Length: 77
Image 1 (cartoon, helix red, strand yellow):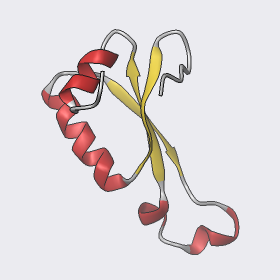
Image 2 (tube, rainbow, N blue to C red; image 1 turned 180 degrees about the horizontal axis):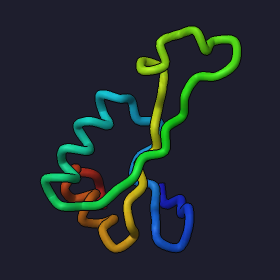
Image 3 (cartoon, one colour; image 1 turned 30 degrees about the vertical axis):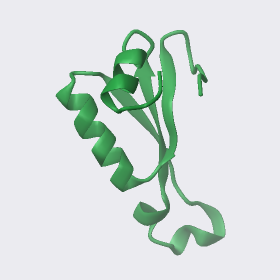
Image 4 (cartoon, one colour; image 1 turned 180 degrees about the vertical axis):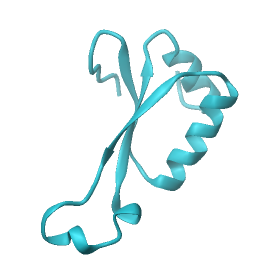
């Protein structure tokens, strides 16, 4: 997964649940790796559902820290 959003960010993980996101955030913060999240929320007819359970996010990492983040999370390099 090497999708690039601009010249500086790369997608680390996509469609991450809230629980997974918290675990990833903890590891990234412990390793002083900057990141940002792009959340996707339910809209339309199913908007009445609890969005916290149904929302997903993509986690982006600066390209200079991408390999370090993958190693910190135990992902294949």
